[in-house]
Length: 241
Ligand code: SF4
Image 1 (cartoon, rainbow, N blue to C red):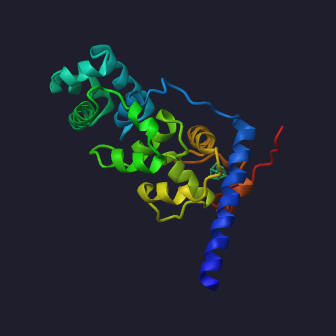
Image 2 (image 1 turned 120 degrees about the horizontal axis):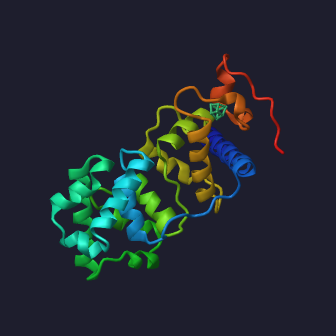
Image 3 (image 1 turned 135 degrees about the vertical axis):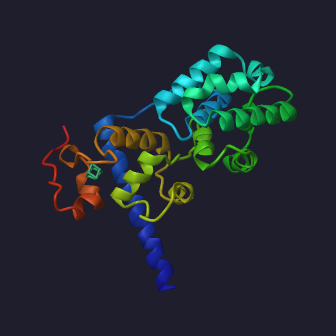
């Protein structure tokens, strides 16, 4: 009984911490909006192309794929080697081409056309079960589809977010990205997944980098576990405008 109360309290503390970090980031970076076409199939393919590569290479691969095959129907009819050559800049081209084709075939067989609009009628749990069962759609891809393609409450955990979450202390040190998706579901403030996701990535790219985070420029150091335990890192003497 005492143990479960302690666990509950810890969860409440972490929730409060995540909420505070979300608000501090919004003060610093604003309220980001959803970018892109908002078409769930476009988002899904784009996210598959983003696996194990950076945004620049993903964009290049996606643009080349769309230039060669303007409609997803064209991709489905296209030769695998042409798809592989188009998406080469994104890395793992053979594997990604195979997965994209398999997913397109699955959609066509199920729906008779290449559209994921049928997902809009499902609740998020049903989408998780249906799409998460397909090869090439892991937790991050699934959460990107939910958040960016379908406007649902979902929190994709990429390498920036995993690293920063551990530094702040709201993701346990030993936890991998896959488990962190489930972990974060209990901690997210309502209607804030998009904002926290995009603002944390921005923090990770500009200040809280993997190597040598620039803590002296960070306005969130007061919330940071890593900062409080690293002696060589000076507390930022900054205040919000
Ligand atoms: S204080 Fe340093 S380690 Fe902590 S979030 Fe800011 S930049 Fe990252």
